[in-house]
Structure formats: structure tokens, C-alpha cells
Amino acid sequence: MQILIGVLGRNFVLVFAVLAFVAVVLLVEGAYLSWNAARGPEARRLGRRLVEVSAGGDSPALSIVRRQVAGHLPRLDRWLAQLPRLHRLDRLLAQSGLGWSIATLLTASVLCGLGVALAVALWPSAPASAAVGAGAVAAALPALYVRRRARARLHRFERQLPDALDLIGRALRAGHAFPTALKMIGEEMSDPIGAEFRIAYDEINYGVTMAQALGNLAARVGSTDLRYFVIAVLIQREAGGNLAEILGNLAALIRQRLTLFGKVRVLSAEGRLSAWILAILPFALAAVIDLINPHFLAVLHTDPIGVRMVVAALAMMAVGIVWMRQIVRIRV
Image 1 (tube, rainbow, N blue to C red):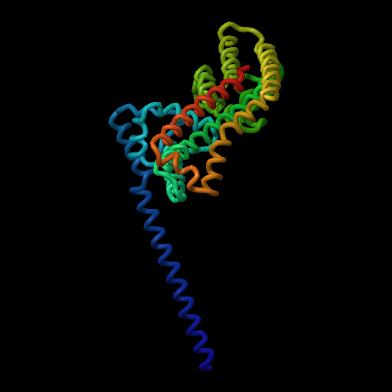
Image 2 (spheres, helix red, strand yellow; image 1 turned 45 degrees about the horizontal axis):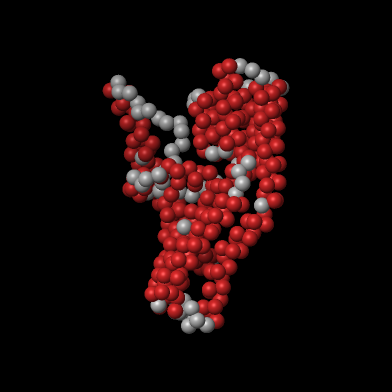
């Protein structure tokens, strides 16, 4: 009997503790919900709206266009907004599809530059100028990576564009409206063209004019072929004509251009490979020689004549790299 009373007593204490804990949690939750309903962000926004309506004031203009911020902190955003040519860098980040902000790119550049400069400074017999130069080159790597991603995304977009134009033409022949054709591309085609056309359709659906939405699309992507498409659509809306036939001819022209571009890349592949080898080989050999015999190349950064020779060699290599790039870069 005493054992049963003891067990019931311990269970009663446990049940009471659990109920007390639940009661405290519910009390805290109720107090928070009550405070949030009276003083939370939604309540403050509703209060400001009621004050504006009761005072007869005009509500602030709301923009339906997405605003790209430079950083995640307001103060950092204001500081970065004062930098020159910020919109070009912002557009490049948007075209890359990485989802980076300008603050993220600057942080990556600083970390890469400092990390590589520190690693070179710890290298045996490495001069301070080499650490500074390597850090400067490494700081530019994130920007080059973003630019490469943007270029690759643009190439994928241009390869998808003829199929998208054919899809728009078939949709128009079937009796669909032009905005509906844009929606079909956004739903049925993969990124990057699907994502860009979804944004254009959303802008039109939210009230942006057709000309402005297509202009924003051309500005975001930066494709010459897409600009031809936008110009054709806008001219057809003003002057009339068979838009499906126009888009079919434009798709055929873009396919021929892409075919010619592929042939040019194949013919210039040997020159591009030679350019890469000639640009990387001197630095790779210098690193290997310095690792095997550190004193062999020491005269190049200890003697003034050696320093001038290195500077002259780097300048001539830079000119040669630019020259080879212009030779193998053929525009179609």
C-alpha cells in the first residue's frame, strides 16, 4: 500500500510539472501573440495606413519592379550605391545567375587577394612585390568567374532562343495571346530562358507595359538576338503583320548564325589552346625552377637590372596575350 502511494505521489509530481510547463509555454505564447497583434510590424503598418486614409493623404507609390540591393545591410547598401559604374557590375551579377550581391563579390575578392598574398609571402625567397602582384591577380578571380558564368549563361540562352521563338509562333497560330505564349515559355522551357521569360510575364501580369517588360528582358540578358526579337515584336505591334511568320524567320536566322559560330570555334580551337599554353608556360616554369633551386632566379628580384627585365617581360607578355586574344576572337 505504501509502495502504491509512493508511485502515485511521484507520478502526481511528474504530471504536475508537465502541466505547469505547458501552462507557462501557453502563457508566454499568448502574451507574445497579444503584443504582436497590438504592436507588431503588421499592426504598425496598418496603423500608418489608417492614418494616411483618415488624413486624406496620398499613399506612397509602390514599385512593382524588383529592386536589386548591393548588400544586406542598409548602411553598406548606401555606401556601395555611391560607387561609380555600380549598375554595370549589378547587371553582370544578374546575368551570371549566381544570386550574388555586390557585397558578396567584394568580400570574395578581398578574401582571395589576402589569402593568395599571404601564401606567396610565406613562399621561400619570394619578394614582397610578388606577393602584392599575386594578391592583385587573385582579387580579380571572383570577378572573372562571374564574367565567365555570365558568358556561359548567355550562350545557353542564345541556344534556347530559336526553340522559344518557334514555340511562340506555334502558340500564336493556335490562337493564344502573346503574353500567354511568354507564360508557356516560362513554364515549359528550362533555365535560363524559362526564368527570364517568367519574369517578363510576371511584369506584364502585374501591370507593366509590354514595351517596358520586353525592354527590361533585353536589358537583363544582354543578347543581340533577343534585342532583334524585342524590336520585331514592338514594330509588329505598331505596324501590324504576321508575327508568327516573322518569329519563324528570325529563329531560322539565329540557327544559321549559331551553326556558323560553332564552325568558327572549331577552326580557332588550336589557336586558343596555343594562346593558353604560351600564357601559362612561363609562370609555371618559373615556379618549378624556384622550387627546385631558389637561388637560380634570385637575381631577377634582387638586382635592379633583373627587376627591370621582369617588368619588361611581363609587359610584353601582357601585350602578347591581348594580341593573341584578338586574333582567335572572331565575331559572327
